[in-house]
Amino acid sequence: MSNGEFSYIDWLRRRTPPSPGVLVGPGDDTAVLRPPTGSLLVTTDMLLEGSCFRLAEAGPFRVGRKALAVNLSDIAAMAGVPTAAVVSVGLPREGGRELAEQLYLGMRKVADEFKVPLVGGDTNSWNGPLSISVTMLGEATSRGPVLRSGAKLGDWIMVTGPLGGSILGHHLDFMPRVREAIRLHESADLHSMIDVSDGLAKDLHHICEESSCGAVVNAEAIPISDAAKNLAMTDGISELDHALSDGEDFELVFTVSPEDGERLLSEQPVPGITVHHIGEIVATGYWIERKGQREMLEPRGYEHGI
Amino acid sequence: MSNGEFSYIDWLRRRTPPSPGVLVGPGDDTAVLRPPTGSLLVTTDMLLEGSCFRLAEAGPFRVGRKALAVNLSDIAAMAGVPTAAVVSVGLPREGGRELAEQLYLGMRKVADEFKVPLVGGDTNSWNGPLSISVTMLGEATSRGPVLRSGAKLGDWIMVTGPLGGSILGHHLDFMPRVREAIRLHESADLHSMIDVSDGLAKDLHHICEESSCGAVVNAEAIPISDAAKNLAMTDGISELDHALSDGEDFELVFTVSPEDGERLLSEQPVPGITVHHIGEIVATGYWIERKGQREMLEPRGYEHGI
Image (tube, rainbow over all chains, first blue to last red; front, top):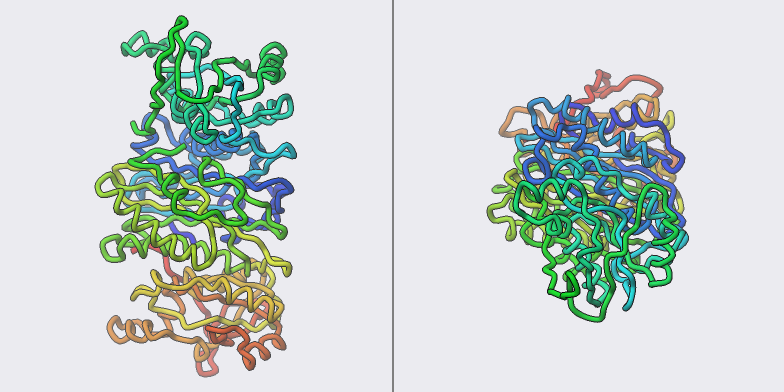
């Protein structure tokens, strides 16, 4: 079923070269894909104008790019290989066609970077603001997917890059850590992993909940982004709080055995990122340590509203 | 990534019993599914308030049901087996929680009828109207997916049920022809198939385009629904035009060899439906025959706007 001012699917079809895993599509409403050999991964994210982004500020190209990239980040969080995406959009009636074109170009840019074919979609016009939903399919590598639920007592907690202040631009322009996650998964036995979308304090808490454990984070060890430092100078919120709670960094937080952690830290085997050791998995409680003092850490984060 | 007033995903998790094909989910942002043995099918449809439905008239339960059912119909159109669905919703801030609950119950009803687990989703609140996007995964049977592109010269064109007037209620309450499609595919060599979402005249034309052929439809043979007859009595549009162009019947139009067609017509092997022979595939042109007179048929249909 499709409607709207023009057929987005036909347009995709004309522009998307055939991809080896795509058997049929996106000409039919349903695409036919070669089945994965590993477990099938599926994730979906919706971006809504005025809530998840401001269209006038971000521009449709960056919004399209982000709509795809946040889903790639969810596949990365399992160390999976993204394989195909479908896209549904609700376009405002006024100017919908140019909007769709720029959205599509933004999606296509990041899709091409990760060799992910856009295999189908549904385009609609309405009297509401811009609404975009992307569903990303992926495949687990032969090492299996990395889950939130696998953290073990004594694990090192590690993160792939600096955190905080993404609102200054990183939340639109980040590169999902797809390749880095796969390389990490090859280099070490990743026990658990999540991407930082809601903020470190909230996302690491998801790992603790799913793994039935606690965590201690070392405040001095958290890598803080320049953006968080810049924000802290103007808004009176500490750079640490920005790093803990801002969200949409799309770095990966993962846990490994101390042995693997030490090796990753000294060898830094993954090009393009520096992994940091920011804490340990403990039996119970959720803590942050500052200058040797342990305090409770609130699992608060970004609410994805603006 | 998720936001909104409450976690739809957590809510799904509490309510959705584990399903045999689901390895992990919907606790993580990304669900892990057993890979299909046949080709992987993927389809997506977005329903938008005020454009695809009027919430006050339909009620959220029926809207939720329809959001899932239209995607099931797309899988049925390939004679596929639906295996899992993900759901993204943009909820208006006012009354979003009750709305989500009724939507979910409607989705869940039809999902349960077809044993399709809801494995993930993304819930958002915003200042816009209700927006729902469903992506349905499926698997081709061992006979392979039925495509739009397989019609052959001389094929009989057949339809699974009466058409027209769905606006009177059928567009919300239809049962997707999932089981019927699989039974038909077991009973005969289906050359091509599509579901009637845009209207017979438009959807059959998709088969002709994709199969590079023409068609002749016999006006007297088209099964016309009671709803189409009722509408024709009040709006001055003929019942035939309703049957040709109304859309959202979600019956299946398919083509088979004349031998298979004759057998299906006399044996009627699929419980719950009566298949009708409504025309033939020809080399070129797109025609309707009335009382022995052949006229051009316009591939016009429903635009999915209200």
